[in-house]
Structure formats: structure tokens, C-alpha cells
Amino acid sequence: MHSKEFPWAQYKPKDGILVVQPVWITEREIQFLMQLYAPFIGKEATLLYATLYGELSPSEYESEVFSISELLSMTNLGMPDFYLAKTRLEGIGLLKTYRKEPTASRPQTYTMELQAPTSPRLFFKDALLSTLLLNQIGSHRFEKLKQRFLVSKPGDLGENDSAQFEEAYRLPYNMESYTRNHAQENRMVLDSKQQAEFEFTSDVDWDLIEGLLKTEFVDLNSITKGVRKIVDALYRAYGFTEQEIAQFLVIASDLTTKVIDEEFLLKLGQEAAQDKVTQLRSEEVVEPVVVEPTEAQVVEGASEEELAIQQLIQAAKGMAPIDFVSSIKAQKKGYVSKAERQLIFDLVSVSGLPNEVLNILFHYALVQLDNATLARNFIDAIANDWATKEIKTAQEAMEAVRNRDLQREVKRKQQLHNAGKNNYRRQGGYQEQLPDWAKDSNAKEKQTPAPTESQSTQVSSDLAEQIAKLKTSNQREQQ
Image (cartoon, rainbow, N blue to C red):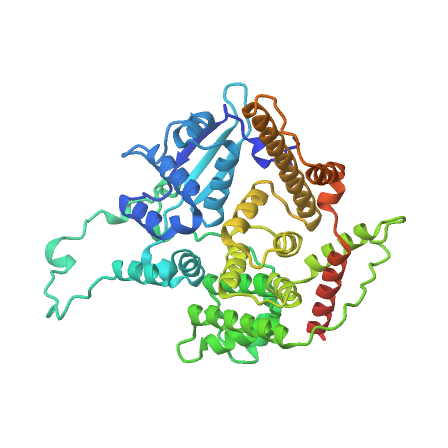
């Protein structure tokens, strides 16, 4: 199929891989990876990191070149799982990948630069990383891990009685003759403190936020990279405005120490998100309002189903995931649980899927499949699949839903067919004579046509009503 649908198609088994480590990674840091990162990056990503690390010589900063085919054999991963594991490592800042075009003498080669896991002290200081781990392993295990990495401070050591430099050494007489070689220095291994933090893209209007904070006398230097990561996740997952985020930052800021409490900031955002959900549930559900698509969206001769799909896509693009899910739950007389809020936050933080794609996924689970809740394993499985296929728009997500339903229908028919064949074999071709009432029932079942492609993927009139309610809820919330 087209490489757009399968992004791993760009990787060929004969392509080369070179592993490098700009910072010397120790066995202790591998332990940090296993205990702190592995629970939320997944077993495939953990296995890939450990395998790449194992290819490094104990005395070298880079490996020999080997093929992707060899890597897949060592990890027992297929190409799709390899691609997903690689992207999960890259997304959390544990791997950087560089590509060199093939030449006449060598195949296309990828340089995979392993990044050292952050220390426990910095990990637990990072509210985003800590929350991802906490949501996966639970508070009991989380607190045990924190205790494991605590170091007891020594007591009173007394007066410092160490010798000074001049007591042990003489200054070299020719020190001024030493000339630094900057080219060589740039090639030397980095200190772990020099390793760059992983990048985190942001859609937030920071100019507006900083302008608002200046009026509240908040030191802009207190907006660290960690703070920006949390703000971006809150912005995408819960749909807060820049004005609301500025208020969170003001409350979480200590004007004396000029520090923003990241953990408190995250807690403020999650509590405010719960307040939004509670407010939505308490509001009276009004009659659905028909949302007319824009002139550009109207397709001549479009069916009711096609118009409903257009409206669903429009709603998915215009609403934050928490608002989208809350609206659906309110219509079903349900509520958004704490586990579901955490799931939404986690997906926004690490999946790399746009909000509109996540909203289509949530709609598929809650409306089309009529599930009462968002089951983490089910949602994670589909989100991982869509991430590997680089689904970026609501339209592509709708197409993925159609394909998934078609595959399920084909599988169901195949199972029925195989069951019928097995039953025939067990009976040796003999067919039991049925009573008249059973024959009538059987005849009616045979007359019932099998679901067609359009039936398995159509959006019913109930769907149109659901979409109208979503739009109504969104309009009322913005008023």
C-alpha cells in the first residue's frame, strides 16, 4: 500500500544503522530507564532502547554499522512495531534519528543517537513525566519508587579540613603557552549536564500569556521548559484559553522565590477540568439544534449520512478532547471518570495524535460502538495503530474507522464460514431434519441480508442527533 498509510515503508531491511551515544550511558541509567520510563513507553520501546545500547562497545561511543534486518531479528519485532517503538523513544527524548541518503558504496544509513534517561531527581521534579508514570503504575507503586531513590543526607560532618590546590601543587610556569583546540573540544563526549532536553512543540500563544503575566508581576524567567510542557498538555487536552492558563500560572507562582510550582500547576489544571465536566453535567440538556454546514462544506446531492459526517468532523476539529467526551457522556446520562480524564491527558501528552483525530477515536468508542466508558487498553491499541499510520486529520481517522469495521465484518464472516464447515465435517455431511417452526425461523435468518459496507460504516440518524448535541453543547459553553 501507499507509504502514507504505512510510514514504516521508508525503512528497508538492508538499510544500515549506526548507534552513537553523545553522553556515556551507564548501567545505573539503564536501571532508571527500566523503572521510570518502561511502564509508560511500553515494552517494545524499552526493548529497542536496550538492544541499541547493547550494540555499543564497552569502550566506544559508537557501534559498528548493522542492518535493520539484523535489528528486527535481535528484537523479534516486525517493521510496524519497530517504527512505533522508535517514535515513542523519540517523542519522550530518549532517541534522535538522522538519515543519510544511499551512495554507490553504501545503503541508506540511519544514525540513532541514544539519549541518557534523566536522573530520578529531575524525573520526579518534572510534573509531566511524573504524571505519565503515576497514571500507569498507580500511587502506591509510585511512592515506593520515590522512596527507593531517596538518599539519606549525612549528619554534621564537622569542619572542612581538606587541602587547598596551592598546598599540593605549583602553578606550571608555561601555562600561558597552552592553546585550546576548539575543533577537538567539540568532538569530545558531552557531560551529562550538557545533554539537551527533549523538545516539546507548543500551540499556545505565549506572547499573550506573557503579556497577561506582566500585569500580575509574575517573573517571566519562572516559565521553565517544564512549565511550558505542562501548559501545552493542559491547553490541548482540556481546551483552556490563554487567559485561564495565565490565571493558573499566577496562582502557582511564588512571587517571593520567583518559582512556579509545576506539580501545583498541573493539579490546578486537572481540578479546573473536573469543574468543567461537573458544570456540563449539571446543565439541562436542551433539544438538539440542527447545525447547518458551511457553504464550502455542502456537497451537491450529499446524503444525510454524508452531511452528518461533515458535522462530526467539524465538531471534532472545534472542541478540546475533554469537552468532546464530556458532551457525549452528558447525552448518555453518564460522566467522565477520573481514569478517563487521565487517559485523555496521557494520549494528548505522548501519542502525537492531533485533537481532531483523538475526538474521532473517542466518538467511535462511545457512540458507534456504544461503549459506556473509554477502556484504556482498547483506546491505546487503536491510538498506537493510528500513530504508526501517521493519521493526522479527522477525515483520515474516519477512513481508518471504516477500514476497521470492514476488517471486523470480514473476520466475522470468515469465522461463521469456518464454523459452518467444521460443523458439517463433524456431522459427516448429515443434516438433521428440523421441525416446521425451526425451518421458518431458519428461513427468515437466511433471508436477512449480510451487512454491506455502507451499513457497517454508516452514520445513522441517531449519529446526526449526537453531533447536533455536541455542537449545541459547544455553542452554549462558548456563550
